[in-house]
Length: 300
Image (tube, rainbow, N blue to C red):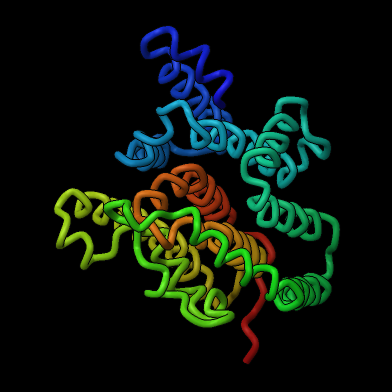
């Protein structure tokens, strides 16, 4: 980023132009593969025009690169789901490589998402699919348990990278005071790291009220898309196990790995969120269109 930034910086606004092109193409690559109605496309474009997302992805930095990369990766996921492409294309491999270089922790969610899609495509038995999901949950919990000491230690290391001299930096003691607090307060931390400024911070800093409002818009859009699909399935006395597995597992891992980098500073939270919020939006937008796949009757 330093090397290319130094070159692009010699020409006014060239860096911004490159960032805009990277972000635009990453989003276009995905949207061109999702069969959306005109109304849904306009809805998607409005969502992708939200202020903080637009600002951070139009600056030549890691965010525009990861938006580009995740757009390519999601394009591959669509092709994998629709049996169009089992092996990633060269440009999609570039996307995977950039994610590995810039945000390797995002690969946890991506690789598990690929596993879920592959299992659902190649195994016909609903019982085996259910067993697979149970085993995946056990596997994830086991990994978190086995690495709890390493993860807890790293969480304290992250604190040293946030200076309290920063106007918005929070004292880590508001959420982490004792050993394993990283895990005890994970869900609270994931929420705070996703929305950025809390309501009390927004009240004391008017500029952050706009960011808080935008975060609430994003959160409510996600809840609306998720609940709409869930209500549709339950109205038919069915549960879309595939949808639940895809959404809940991917959202958990993306927000969990984002949590330590965003919980200590609302500015960092919003900036880093800009790199992956479109991926989560595409996930809901695309998979809520799959209404007839792998429905099972609720137990009881």
